[in-house]
Image (tube, rainbow, N blue to C red; front, side, top):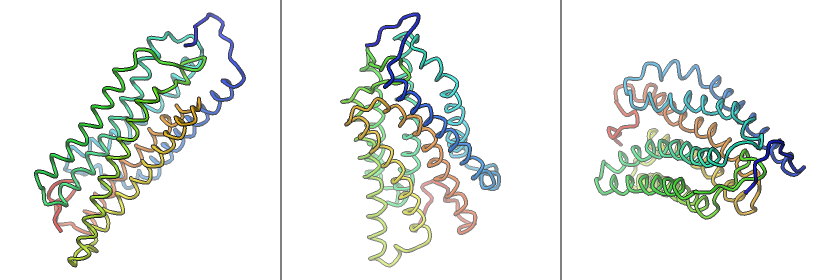
Length: 278
């Protein structure tokens, strides 16, 4: 654990790692702003007039709350990298990182779970199973937050070192849940093709949307595991990228579905609800 002094001095390796992570933070923020500009016409056309308020609020969380979170990261980074942050605040910062990441991925999971649940004709056993997956993932995140009485960091708590065992387990569970959901979409499409309805525009759209989400989350989780495996001091950069990536993925899941519903199924209320019919 690094001791805090009034005039901290940093090693060259730390300064290089800190500069690299700050560049990643700025790059992630730029990506998020670019994505907001890119999707704003669709947001104005489809989201602002949505009648399904739950997912409207989901969209605003992904789009604007996570933007505020990313700006907060930019604002607080000088203080966290000063070397004068108390250990107690470093622990709070670590728990905050886990909390924000889990809330975002749980909301993405919820959107996908509702779609899968609808595709399986609102089967109660499927619903309980999928709900259990989200609870398992969230429960592990809580354990991850609670079981960090001491946080290691490299010279300043801007470069936190994740608790490897808990971080690995948490990341693997996230990947597993995403893989199960993706597998269920593919299974439904394969069965549908055999029965003659698997190439319907709705099912093809849902599988394509789920695939895009899966690739993004899988790459993010794989990068996390790689940083942890090599004990790289820049591992925290993955979190600064997770916020803009979850924002882009979550917004597109909602925006794409609403656009599809308006253009292809104008008479059906299918927006992310169990009213999806095939």
